[in-house]
Image 1 (cartoon, rainbow, N blue to C red):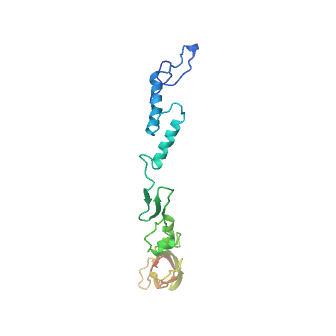
Image 2: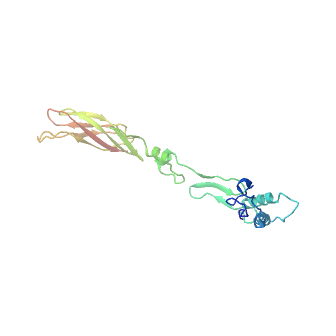
Image 3: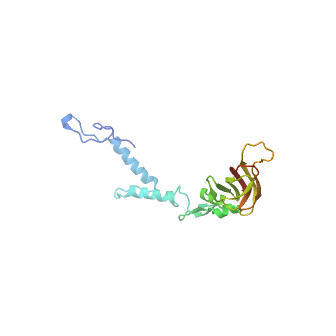
Amino acid sequence: MQRIAGPGHVDNRFSEGNPNIGQQATMVTAAFMNSVQEEIARACELAGIALDPDNNEQLYAAILAIAVGAAGAGGGAVPTTRTVTGAGLATGGGDLAADRVITVAKASAAEVLAGVNDTKAVTPLALQGGAGGRLLAGIGYVTIFGFIIQWGTYSVGANSSVSVTFPTTFPTMCVHADVAGGRLDYGAQDNNPVVSGKSASGMTVFNATDGVGVTGTYLAIGY
């Protein structure tokens, strides 16, 4: 294919000319018309259509035939008997005679938490739900696939105990709990707070220091 390049063209485009400025109209050259003719004729011939001087719809027929051939059973087309089917986590598909759907099933939060289904994909939302609840605050907890870490603060008077309730109850048990905090005291009898008891829902903090209460933080681990 070529653009018009005959005398009077303007940037290879046709011009009607302008006598006022001495611009001549574009001359249609044989080279240009032969190029257009062969482009059109070639499309018809490649589509298997014999040129017919009395038929002015052959270019349309050629375009339609080429399009159908590319999608159906024409020359060079992908056969409709070719199949696209799922594998791995993907299911569905079929031959190309109709629209097909490939599906990837997604796991629910409960399935992520159970951790036994190996046939579904895990989305970020399901992962967060399956990992478990969380409370990200000064007194809070985080669940990681059933493993729970909890934290918070306590305040206990001198030579006394205090009960601390966890932000959430461990479904099974509290495996470990510990505290930090107290005061700098070298008296042999003035020991800093310790965890004197624990359960799934809370713990007891005992403070052996004389004359003053203390505050601090705690960390509890369980499932």
